[in-house]
Image 1: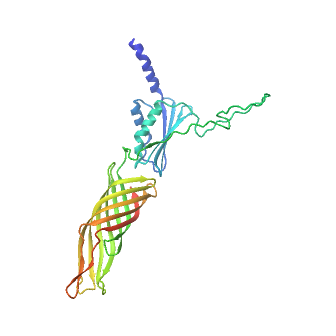
Image 2 (image 1 turned 180 degrees about the vertical axis):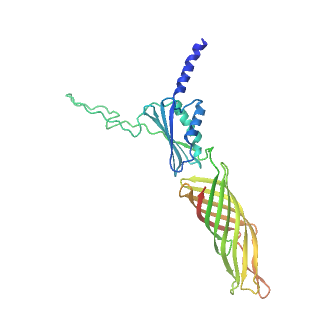
Image 3 (image 1 turned 90 degrees about the vertical axis):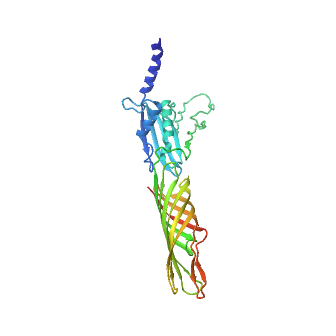
Length: 348
């Protein structure tokens, strides 16, 4: 009795396990790191606990997956046909996550469900069935009720809505991200007037952690003269800084970031035109907050526009002596400095 009860279940499982599917994955530009056929095969078969994509028996299902990337993020379009080529359906998954691997788990689950319980054949969305040819009749013409093949067709079922994954979906294969920046900078309040310079930056971001960014720059010399006469001083500056960027938001081809950090620097003052000309170096330390927007030019290039505010914790006062023995101020940095940066980013 026990053997008789168990036999039908064993036969059903064997028949189900003998079904085979064929998998084909195509990748558009910029999607080379998306899930490949080998990883997807392992993920689907691990969920179903049986061999699915087999070559030892004729395929009864054909699964095609196409990855694309555009301004809206990553997309995976899945199409399924039976062994005779009849169209069974399609599904689409999209996400604005930073890495394509955010699609991995959801895509494997969708494929596993569809392979385990394939939908019935249906007309493909782009196909329009031909209307039957009219047949001659001696009977008076009578208006026929509208059919699916007549001019007044019943609405066809719409395509399934895409499955949209949140941007913060975990991406198991997301790698470390590195980027180099080369920018021009302009500052108010650091040196006399509007100081121009250059800045280099290196950013590193581990999966699910904020980006850390190391940067350094230089300001071209600026002169400040005293109210009367040609005497004055020439100022230039070097600086390095470290900041953490806990906020980033991807909106189409733009990415917005907010950062906070600190910078240390050296301001050199060289006097000229006085009876005694001296050179003085002053060390600076400042806290900073920065906002930036990146405009993507491609998968590895972007234009960066940023602005930061610097709060110096130490400000040097540069003075000179007058003939009567008094001291007059020549220049002092602002309590809050503003810095603009514009340049190119290379994503590695």
